[in-house]
Image 1 (cartoon, rainbow, N blue to C red):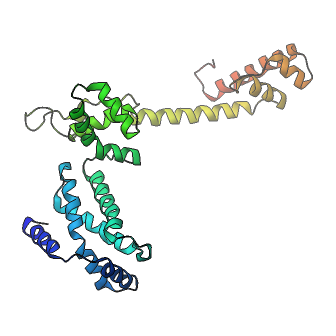
Image 2: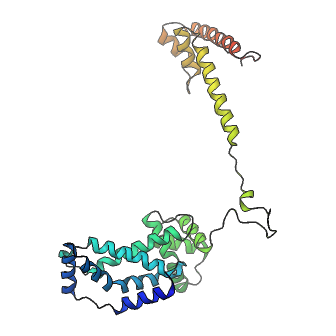
Image 3: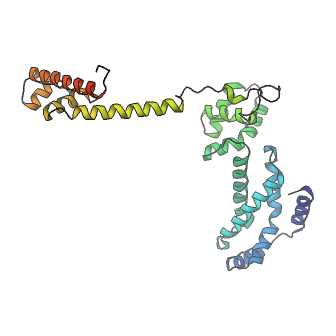
Length: 284
């Protein structure tokens, strides 16, 4: 919305007559019955409320015309939900919807990093500057950690949240594709200096393939064991907490020495089977 259009809209809103309580009530009843003209009259009469609210959020750096448009959306939402039987003035009811619509717009567009996803975070985002200025005025010596702690107590959030939000509000977004220097084309970009400790994609694929191959080798090798050998290997070698020789002997009804002998024989069978599956390598 360009400036002439915005100024014209503001003039029209300011010329719209105020609605008396009874008149507002009758229009709300007509709108509920489907009278679109009644809804238009209610919205037009309260556009000055939208414009006033937009002025309170101008310090976030977003176009006033956009804030007014978002506030108008909130105003229409309030009109669609208003219940005249509750004997509440429409302006009182609509204020919440207008403010919520503008705040949501600001949170979506103020930064490329989305913030204020909880009610506490939203309160922190919209009140931090005001509260900080008030505390600084009341107590100029309150700075640093002490100031953050006081703000956290007032807003009911963690001190770390206050520090993080204050840092975000103090700086603007920077593109990772922005050049580090002004050397023109070919200059290094910010993203070139980001360090990632994760494996490269080809390493991840290679490790996945190797792990699957080893799993298949082990499955085939285990199939060469008889049921008792397989159970002993599973209980002793393939569990996070391996069973003791004595406990396995008690379960199987044999001595722990016999369990040790069967385990040794099973390990040798596995070694032979794995060596046969992968010629040229000796099993560990």
